[in-house]
Image 1 (cartoon, one colour):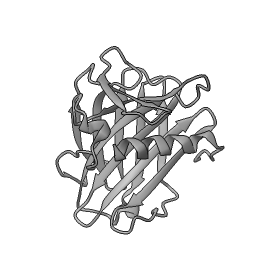
Image 2 (image 1 turned 90 degrees about the vertical axis):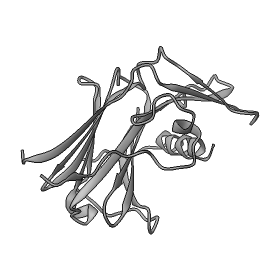
Image 3 (image 1 turned 60 degrees about the vertical axis):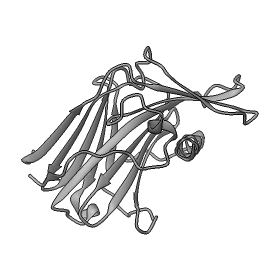
Length: 207
């Protein structure tokens, strides 16, 4: 339940105005995720027991591919979904290096977008002016780019991610509803309600 609460809290931030953030060889890893494995999470306003069910018809949250590129200059995580158009969107990304773990939150609302980078050891946000996120509706993908310098220039990196959408823009609702799909877990409850970190792939060395 804690992860669900954190993700909903992160999406609430998008209700306020945000500022829009303004090829080398690479080693690449690609994971193809199952289709139709989105989970639908409903949290009633009266704080009764939350419900989770599979939502196989949902296309706006359904992750189909996760790709991690590790170049000499940056780590690039690309999340492909079936239909990215519109709505409040959160794309959590986890990067693991030999010396640290990092959590990224890429968020989009009708008011703008934002990208945060946090180090697990200190819990503090990492200063990284050149990090970037792009929500590409035409290609139905989210691309997060983090300079290797911001990650301590690691020899390798492991990456994972997912997508979460919500109904926070709807005022006439008695429940908070969101859908979620973690790329490396297929339709399992821990992908939404688990307290553990996002699952990551194998080590990808700098190209």
